Image (cartoon, rainbow, N blue to C red; front, side, top):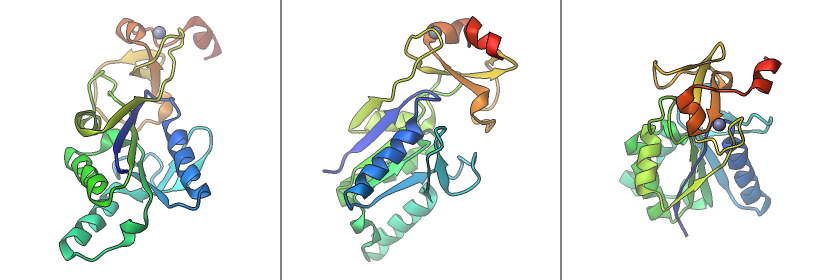
Length: 202
Ligand SMILES: [Zn+2]
């Protein structure tokens, strides 16, 4: 049955690897699953999703997918999407509210599972637009866990420059993963973004 899922996690919680594994599981069973990502997420500059573990796959831009879906609704012609069994979305925090609403329509109209992976909050600890809308309308909201250097659950994405936490700036900065450290709330608020061992390594 079609349901809209939001699986959120901090940086480094293997969301992309999860997304790729879910796709693989569908394909292994002879089913068809595609991966989408928003165009704004241009860290790779191309239509691929890459996990930090080294897994990667081709993807389709959300904008292109939704344009085709909308065209199809208006023209009444089917059926490229009828052959789909699952839609997976990476970097879902960057979706617009309208894009999330359209993905929900895809779920309901085509009875398809749409599984969105993304960050919950930005480096100032506020919800991203896409994540906020997903929190509002998803059927299932699930955490992809990861831990702070202290061992507590990490829910915050600290932006870091020269080992120090940064609290001001643009919401989206494509500096790559090395600009962010996932930490617990205690260490997000205190600004201690790494333990002594990590500092020694640097
Ligand atoms: Zn901590």
